[in-house]
Image (cartoon, rainbow, N blue to C red; front, side, top):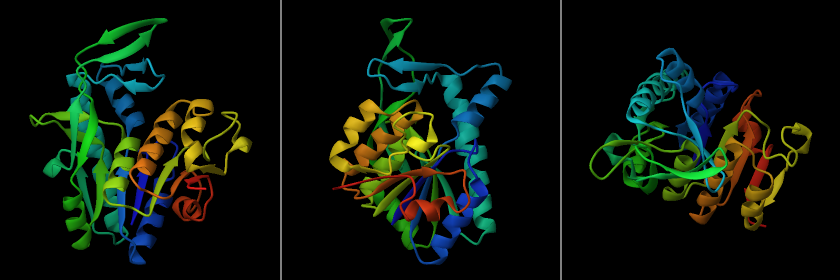
Length: 270
């Protein structure tokens, strides 16, 4: 089983990615697709007059502040427009794709963060009213049932709280949690850079291989921006038993095929 994490549409060749997914499915491989969509959500938020807000945690991770209006925009754009666009494209390629968000069937359960501890203008402060969560459980049984029935799940990164309310969760960490829950052989994270770079943004400095036991060190030393969340998701997948994670370039032709051949940054035990 392979879990594929892809962004929405920004900078990635979604046609090439879907073509590769279709080829894997036609070869009998079981595939789960997890997608993002933050760029398109940002664009729609601006058009609606509700500019996105990003905050930096005390540990250095940048995340979206998700008030209720932002959450509703994410549901509309990510779980709606982007998810169904991917389903449409895969269906046109002969893949029996089925679109879900983490809310459906309590696929992804999360605990709402009561407050965010952030750094703003050099000062620490507490930010309340956020509708994001920390993943606690993946309904692996539901995904196995869908896979056994011949479906290819396409999952938007939203979760459900114990009281039934929707929560925003990070797509890379969703992919890591799903890969762990289903004991996937490989987790591929496709992005708009060729991998983890020693000297961002110099693409000639891509690190081709990271031993699993050094992943946390690389997170601290080399990860910038969104790559921090990707490496965090990779580390959580490793801790959950996934043996191989590849962070690879989703802008090129045959991006998934090349990633599975080891192009990009491969993270696995030494």
